[in-house]
Image (cartoon, rainbow, N blue to C red; front, side, top):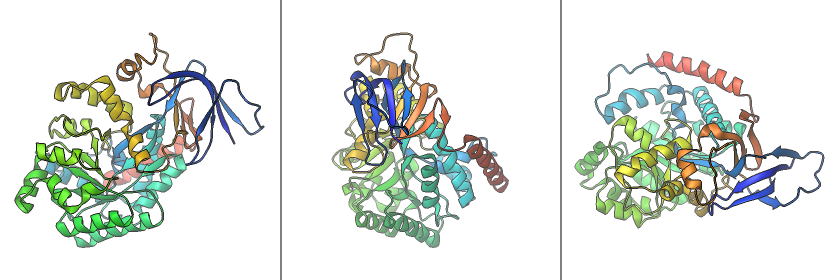
Amino acid sequence: MTLYIKNAEFIDWESLEFTKTNIEVIEGKKGGIRFFNTMPVLSADSKIIDAKGKYVTKSFGCGHHHIYSTLARGMPAPAKAPQNFVEILKYVWWHLDKNLDLEMIRASALASALYCAKNGISFVIDHHASPFAVEGSLFTIKEAFDTIGLSCLLCYEISDRDGEKIRDKGLEETRNYLVAGNPGHVGLHASFTVGDTLLEKAVALAHEHDTGIHIHVAEDLADQDHCLKTYNKRVVQRLFDAGALDLGRSVFGHCLHLSEKEKKLLKNSKAWVAQNIESNLNNNVGLMGYKGFGDRIMLGTDGMHSDMLRSAKAAFFVGQGTEGISFPGIYDRFRNIHRFTRENHFRGDGDNNLVILDYNTPTNMNKDNFLGHFVFGIDSCHVDSLISSGKLIVENKKLVSASEEDILSFAREMGTKLWEKLT
């Protein structure tokens, strides 16, 4: 089936040029789009979407997600109220991830993909953890995303915190996933839970499969304090010495508590930074600007939600105070995931990933003022339809690639099961 969008007001995501056109959408990871002034003669199996009065542009991407946290919404309170970031990990997130099984992971991935799709996201970079359900976890997540029709770049969060046996299972799951030809990273939790042996093995595995490291970096001062005490160096310097900054596909999450030297190392490296402002606010780990980092900064959600427009607005409002960020600056970060995928040749984020916005603005919108509408007007509630790799996933605000009711029913069932294990 060939998909056509007629009466489109197309916004080029790079130039911000507005064009009235008709669009042919070619399906597949290598597919693209073609523009027509008048609609061609269509075959019987063609699908036509009328976008009159709406806007069509490239769909969105998430630079750092935690799909495993999807079932946490409304979860029981921890046994002890956390007093700092490490205790938040210990009593909330590490307690949750230790209780996940593959069915829970599948439910989390399906629900997360559903929410991503309805918020206009077609490509997700995820950082997964499930220490007692490692084997098959990445394949389970990918299968769920395939079911919905979204593209993903996955990794398993390998760590020494649960012992050598689980650490080695993480390495093996990563190796098996990459050997199978799936796009992915070699994931690590953070420096303070990653020993030298693991770091060396992870970098070697990344080199072996021509990919990068995906790791949390100095999200809290505890990460820096541990690194200085244990290795007599700061976190980014440690990663630099291990060769992780030489890997162009690497993603470093957060990067908050860095020295000027560390910022310079990042700026001069090939690594990308994923900013997660709402998570930083929620965990009270600090508000930092990103001046001096270079331009390889993209936005993520850190598992807080699956709404990149929301993340962009939060980063803009906080960024005005921390670094004086501009409209073009926040839009670049919002769209930098496309630069990341393009420069590193990851498939699934091509031109045939489109979002149709039903944005009935009370004021004119054009190339010159689009960024003002992006920050202060366009929200996820305006996502009308999503096309992923040329396939229609959401139409008229409804998921059409799978049953939304079945997905959410399954998620609630697995959420109840998980919560019973947490108490």
